[in-house]
Length: 117
Length: 493
Image (cartoon, rainbow over all chains, first blue to last red; front, side, top):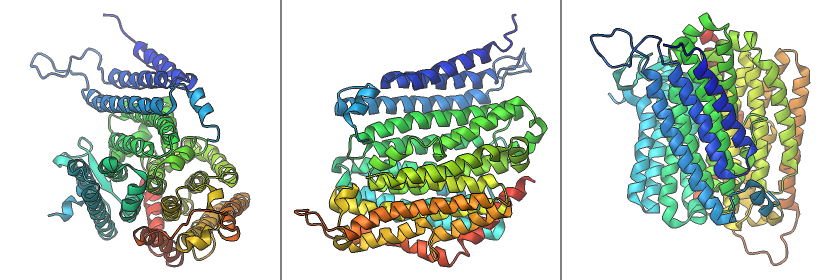
């Protein structure tokens, strides 16, 4: 078996920065939500990565095995996934309302319509 | 029997009342239920504070699981005090809400409003009461998600964009917090705050723990609207319904400041936060910048709610400054200002809520001559404004007095000068409102405006009079804040 080393963590950093960059750089509100999702997903991978114990099996009780991966990060991240889904749903619902009120989902066009804000 | 379950009831009462509000569907019963639940939560908070004063720290094991494996609710003086603030503000704001919500939110959505409000209250109380770092994240998201919804209910369409902007920034902040908690868990294998505090010193000198500290502080900084992470706050407070602004301004940022206190002093401990990381070197300049820049920006605002929102950013600067000084007096100043500012801003935003219901606007130009047309409301605003400036015999004076003492203790007279300068700026922006309301005649052909109804005036005046009362009798606020500061600083040493 190949030792994964820090491979997981490099993926986490790349995804995190990519997601963060999309949130900051894009003016399209839907793309912002997509970026936010990628950003949050990277944290899920981070948590699951450090729950892994080298040479251990999945945390299912069996007499043949004595070492298990840590299941707690998985459970924690289940909560975080639920939160992430709720955030995306709410964000997208707000975008629908914004589109009804302004007729666009581009940030610069929205700002142009409310000059004094 | 019930007394032993008080910490759980604190969170469970509003949590269960929220879905019941949805089932009721009519605005009147939903409001009555929300008010009853909020008063019950206030009663529990009072009992908890009394219990903590008598017996010391309360530890409640949820579901009977022993910490550090199970979730522990841990109530000491610091969070009993924060719980009291949040529950008290909510108990005062809800009676006010009935008329204000009827005027600002469509009738068929009102029951959903009360349900969201209770969820937000649940989240804020939960953050304050829990002793588990991951549980803080869960409650943080409960309160945040519901507050995005509450803000988006504002009448102006800009409420939608303000809520969206807050959603983006708030989620990034909460995710940063999650990363920080994850890194700490990777290093120590525990999520319980007290347990973390014991295990962290052994691994404190690693880059992972330093990174975790940075993620946690920045994440919570976004939620607390600590300068320069405050960009979501002015629009969110400005366009949200009046009740929401008053409630969130008085509680949401305060609870985040409390989490910051916990992370700095309980989890990492003052030795790590102030000696190894030198947290104060970064935070003090930022806090001073917040006080001066946000106050200056407030002067140039034409919307009074927006003006008060910028003033909030400046006031959060005072709290962060007090905490960053790292001494018992400094932290006392931070905690006591947390309480006092909740009353000041709560009162001021409620007064603006009265104005909005009667006048339909909080633009400065529409408020000309309002001092004569709504004398009680504007008188409340003036007293609240005096407290904001820090005139003696008001709570604002007490906070600033302790804060100046803390800076002088450290020999930083220069900070004291800047605090006074920022107070002068507050005088300017409060005076702008007073001048328009009292010394300019009402414009020709202006609509007839009468005084706000008693149901709205009484809650407003309750908070305003609390400002005067706690400005004279400081035994509750200052006494508890000092003891809380001593526990926070002493507990980790």
